[in-house]
Amino acid sequence: MKPIEPARRIRDLPKYLFAEIDRKKKEVASRGVDIISLGIGDPDQPTPPHIVEALRDAARNPVNHRYPDYEGSLPLRTAVGKWYKDRFGVAVDPATEVVVLIGSKEGIAHLPHAYADRGDWVLVPDPGYPVYGIMSAMIGAQVHRMPLCEERAFLPDLGAIPGEIAASAKIMFLNYPNNPTGASAPREFFEEALAFCRERGILLALDCAYSEIHFGHDVYRSIFDLPGAREHAVEFHSLSKTYNMTGWRVGFAVGGAAVIDAMLKVKTNLDSGVFGAVQDAAVAALSGDQSCVERTRAIFAARRQRVAQALTRMGFRFRTPEGAFYFWVRVPEGRTSAQFCMQMLEKAGVVVTPGTGFGPSGEGYFRISLTCPDDRLDEALGRMQKFLA
Image (cartoon, rainbow, N blue to C red):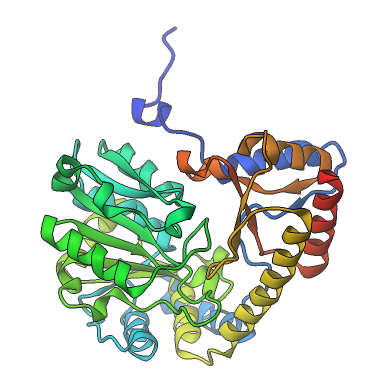
């Protein structure tokens, strides 16, 4: 009997990092080990009550029991437009320049389908969110990794991209505040990146999932207040991190009408819209009192200080994050990222993420997520110190 084989594109794909971490975590936990996970960026705080109440009320509305519009409801797209104006000072047309997504991951995964043909180049940060490269490779595009090095403050060197690759690239993915490094980017870098992409006809795709998780004065500003960005850029936003709504699966993309139209052609053929009640709750999130976002930032800021102090006591080398809620930490000498993280899980019951899960340039680092209750975070840091001793 001849076996049924999956497509080569599936056989060749690496296993998804966080699914693998979850599998290993369950394996160790089955032996009775008390596991504390600092591995995945899933906020531990509940969704603010006014958003939950909006969902409850909207779920009773029979209108929301039918198929939702692919592009998202006009009330939600209008709320996105108002949020953009209030937050960034940028005017967008809700009718043509906004699309609602089943989480920003959906739109990021769809973008290569819309803009890259087989053999085209897609530029991705390394280390970076694995979906950028995986989905590009799945459609047959070639992936060029842009190293994010500590000596360059985790900004890619655009001048180091080979000319022949830059000339045939279709998309450049960037992500600031950055996952996994916690770095932010100065305005001058965004100006440089936009000029690079405009000159070569590359779509600049900005993953802004952590735009509202920032510390100090380095606050993200939309690319769309730069001349020419509307035709050459798209920004992806998620309510997941900002409003503690990871399980709700709702986000949005903003860009020029032609970009949004191309994304919608993919979306309408691959999936459907977001559940209408969730969209109504998203309106409440974007339009309501934003003090809940300030409280979330304050929680992460306090944890950031606590973890920085603990890591310093342990002798780790790291840069204190400027945004997002991750620490990107040097692995002790003599061990690989995977070895160190596996030993941490096996001997201390603490999950941290190996840097190589985000790309080859992540070797020598591991990532700590601050999305853990304070008492468990303190327990994990204590276990780490004992493990190192």
